[in-house]
Amino acid sequence: MSTTEARPAERGRAGRAGRAGRIAAVRPGYLADLARGTDRFFEPRRTDCPWCGSARLRERLRTCDLLQHKPGRFVLDECRDCAHVFQNPRLTGAGLEFYYRDFYDGLGEQRLGGVFGTRTTVYRARARSVAPFTSSPSRPSPASPAPAAAPPARWLDVGTGHGHFCESAREVFPDTRFDGLDLSAGVELAQQHGRLAQGFRGSLPELAPSLAGRYDVVSMFHYLEHSTDPGRELTAARQALRPGGLLLIEVPDPQCRYARLLGRWWLPWLQPQHLNLVPAANLRRRLGELGFEVVLEQHGEAHDPVDLLAAGWLLLDALAPREDAPWLPGTPPGRPRRALRAALFLAAAPLLVLAAVLDHLIARVAGRTGLANAYRLLARRSPSPADEASGAGHTG
Image (cartoon, rainbow, N blue to C red):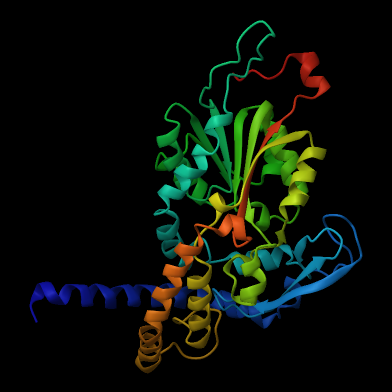
């Protein structure tokens, strides 16, 4: 074997050794957490719906952590009256920290960062959905024509992570200032790398008073389902928007037919990270109550064609877990276990390819057949009487 041919193998061994070192470094912390038990990771089970208050609940799903394989069992309940789906019992603050740790950052940062960084086409499509509804903030008089369409001056992306959406959206709106907000340190890195004009680290409800009336657009892409209180997030988004500003939301659709067909293997259930899954009718109604007018609803356009492929992958990964992890007991997987996993995925490769093909074929009709796994709402903030009296609505 030549030196050139040996280099990929050497890099592979070096990568595995580096990861093994990182796993060994954080394993004592995980073992100490688990030694205290997992009961403290869960709040008491609630007996009413967090969205409408109804006590008519039923169990929708019982599952485990299918992505990281961290210990624990998770239950999703559904409200019989409003169809809201929520984690019950819900994770505590300590539970959220434990199950998010090394998912988007740490050990999981490189893997997920690679996924998010390659979705530029999706990000540009999301940004373009706003274009027909942007306009001058001034209101036309009856004698004058409607204002010409204009790009938003300032856009806040909530739950921005490393700012990949904003980087791509700038290609659609090159004159727009894109800021981002996130709980993780990724938002600070995004600003350093120039993906964001400004990165805010923290929660939107806490930061909204200092951002009041600043933005023409606030976006939340697959963010609300992670929130402990989606209603509070919507109120905070309204505060950050100028009168007439736009709120763009994209979330998983719990009423998608795939959710029932695939059960626990439906990727958007994403337990234990997803805490609240809101049906579109509920979100439309709440936005109206908060003084928004929904101007666009999309289902097929928000669909991500991965349902069958992801379900197959999750099943295979459950049969042959991919690698060592610091929260798992026992010795790290040796060469026989890695070979078994490789053989299993190789044997299943034709089925995975077929699943991917079917996903993309079904995507063409997903919005018309109830198979869209997500939906997108665009809502305009209506001016309040206080806004009218003060003449608010112009961006600075």
